[in-house]
Image 1 (spheres, one colour):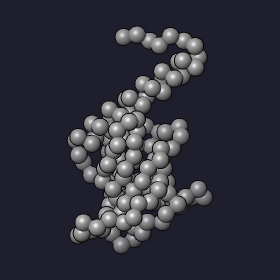
Image 2: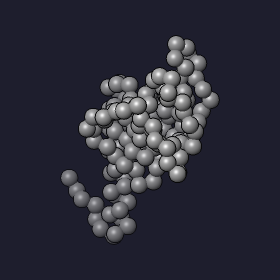
Image 3: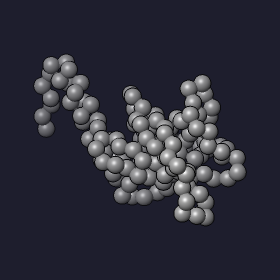
Length: 133
């Protein structure tokens, strides 16, 4: 399974973000029980996650329904596994989101809010005044 990702802006989480996923059964409305994973990075086009679960990818495309919170909004997005790599800390997956303009905007808005909060906390920690616009 080879994949060359597009060059999206990617946000890497200092502390991986907790998420859940369900495997979507092709040709059916059935889904698997939820599995746990951690998001390592994200863009509007996809995410890299790690899980202890070995999702079979050798029989064809696998779609997942991911659920996570970046800042405060619950994000529910469908994506397809485009690569898989085993490591000592779990199995890493590259997920390409199924294009949806409203979800892309929500992810971008949530990343902006999260980043502003992180910058504000770092400035407060140093005892500086936050920049004004």
